[in-house]
Length: 151
Image 1 (cartoon, helix red, strand yellow):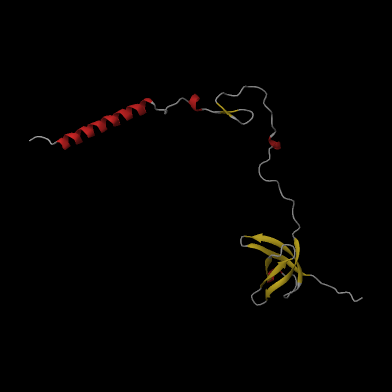
Image 2: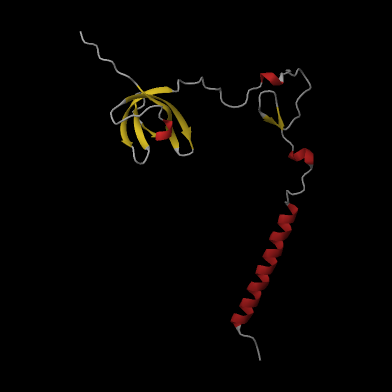
């Protein structure tokens, strides 16, 4: 029984593909860049911060005192924490309310335990604005006594 033409053709194509694959593998092995020496992989940084393949010269090196190195952001000056505002909402039975901050116009939460004297809605107050995990809140809330002058 003899092979048909298409079977011979397929067998020769497979053989050719196998030879091409072996040739590509051989070329890859010849052009392999792996296994470079340590010297070939090293890069140096010169005094200006530029990368170089040449090691820097042992010239003048500036001595830097470790106390002169500053890491991080510059500290902010402490801001005035005492604020003024108006009680916009107060629920006596639940024990909390909100103050509208005069400076930022934000509503700041306060608890009845942070009151130094009883307040009601629309009272002018002073307070200290602090922050916790839930956001800003007011402490040391005091009512401002507004005295009207009769002229």
